[in-house]
Structures are given as structure tokens and as C-alpha cells.
Length: 231
Image (cartoon, rainbow, N blue to C red; front, side, top):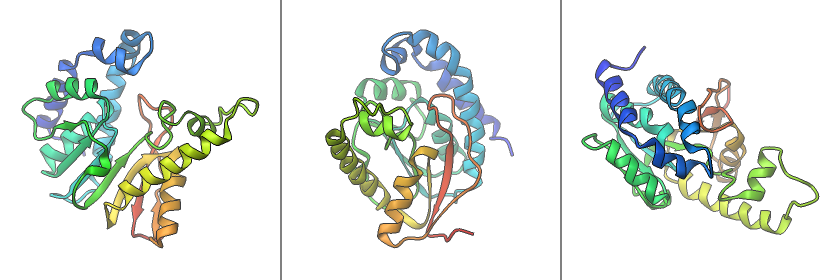
């Protein structure tokens, strides 16, 4: 079922209001204008499609925690707040991007915060954590290994061990805020971090079979149900 016309209008207004030249400098070392010229429309389109899928999996009036939220998450945040009247907490550590996003989203019932998502208070029935646990900028050795790009000659196992512990802590700090039953939206590459935490905590989880394309991250997105046994 399509999103409501008012929601679609708000999403279109947000995307039309974004400063893509400034975002290009944040997302890319070079070629930022061309990057957004190519991905702006797919990002909006695929985001809307994913918002329709997510809407069918969430209860109304719940709470969602978004880790590392940016442009790609805008349609989801709009859908949750405008159509489902849910509370969303969106965190992004890049100060410049947060300022641009909040300017474009002025007047809407959500706001981005420049904080570590682990500072989010309370319990959430939905966690969005996409391309965070394998972020090559934050975790270069881990990200390379996760994506199959690791060079056996130059790979640094000592740095990887440090990054691995940092990701374990980040995943745990976010997942412990998820109520059971709950839902996690993540990238396919990050599934092992989620399922490993659940196994260590003795929490049942079920990974949905279908995955969904994205316009910015290379790997597709999937859903994991926390507190539910695999079928």
C-alpha cells in the first residue's frame, strides 16, 4: 500500500530542500556533485519503497532508534512520524550533516542529534543500524574483511582486533535497548553481529529471507525479528 499523499509531499519537499553541494563534500572525497546527481532520485525512490515495507512491520505509537541516520533514512523517518505517529530518535556523529538535515526537515516531528546512539534513553521496539558496524571509515580493517576486500599482505590483525571489540561494544550498547519482541533493520553484511549478540544473550531471533536494495550503501537491507524463533 503506498504512503499517504501528505507523507510523499513532505518527503519530496525534504529532498528538494537539501543542500546537495554541501552534502557532496561530506559523503565523498571528490565528485560529490556527480554522486548526488546520480543517487538523489534513487535514494528518494528506494527509501519510499523501503518505508512501505517497514510500515507493515511496525506497531503504531512505538519508538525507533536510528543509528548513523542520514539522507537515506529520511523517507523512513517521515513515514514513522507522519503516518504511524511513532517517536524516532535519529543519531549521526557528523555535525555538518546533522545541521544540513535539520535545516531541510524544519517543521517536521523529528530531529537529528549529534550524539552516540548508545546515549538514547528508554526502550525501543525498532532499531535501525545500517552500514554502521562495518563502516570502512570508522573500521577500515574490519570493513575490508567484511566486504571481502581485505589484502592478506597489508591486513593489520592488531588493528582489526581493536576494531572488533569496538563493534562488539557498539552493537551491544544499541541492541540492549531493543524490547522483545522487537525489530532490527540492518544490512546483510551486519547480520552476524546481530545474531551473535542474540546468541550470547540467549535471545531468540529470526532473519527474514527477503532483502531490499539501497541507493547509497553497497549491500542490501534486511529485517531481523528479536524475540522470535526462526521458522
